Amino acid sequence: MSRRDLLLLLEPGFTDPKYPGERFICPAGAPIEGLLASDTSRNARLDIRRLAFERPRAEVVAALDADHQGLPVLIFGDEQPAPADAQVLGGKRFVTDTRRILDLLAERHGFPKVH
Image (tube, rainbow, N blue to C red; front, side, top):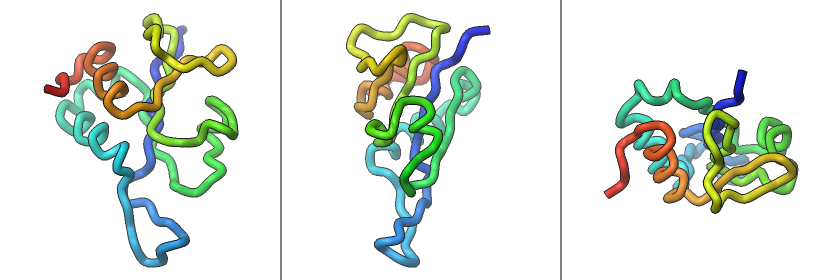
């Protein structure tokens, strides 16, 4: 069985200990969350995980490494070839640019395209 694409995002409404009592969204992840909400039936085509703000982010460390904990990140599975512009870390290929993630969600998983 092949591994699917994995999208890691910060959990909306996260808290930051530097700002007690306040809740936040990730400015880079918000457009991706909007796209995911626009056609929820397509979400099942990939693995989506929303993670806490605090570091270390164990799931990101396990998927990539401790030096690449920034979110959002789309890590490519082996169901489809990874794009040529993907970053490479060991045997993993991934992208971190929000616009590129939006484009790839449309290309690889059938979400609406950004105009």
